Length: 225
Image (cartoon, rainbow, N blue to C red):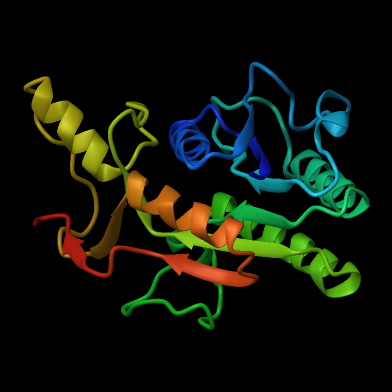
């Protein structure tokens, strides 16, 4: 049995991966917003033990309604986490990045070797976070796995406007409200159910697969479809 520390463990993806890992017999420490402040290392620094696995699912939502946490503060906290993981000699650090927002716009399926061209502040921050962690991997041998998932959907996803199109459509149909559709109806995207994602993430982490991995369903659909 392994001990796994999950930052962002109370969220949409985090709650599911914590349940999956626990069902597999692992000891899981779930750290959510109510238990720790990711941007204040004093709240979590002593919670990582030697030989742990660490999963980072924390996101900084760059919107007018989000907390006033800057990109610099977020990257500084991530830097502190990487240092702590090195000092505790963890077995693997799994960082959840983003597929579409990191690669940007494109007309074909993205491979891991595709040049990252983020077009949003969120995608740029994810790419900056990746590069910071890769620096620790290259210089200090931080055991690092990076996952870039496609568009995630599933039960219990937030009903806010920032949720994915499938969740927004579902909630509007359930409430008998007309759909709001913006942009090109023929744009194609890959949609992945959250349970498939967390199964892949747990495998990636526990099998110590190093490097960058895309996660997707393998089929695309247009908004019109």
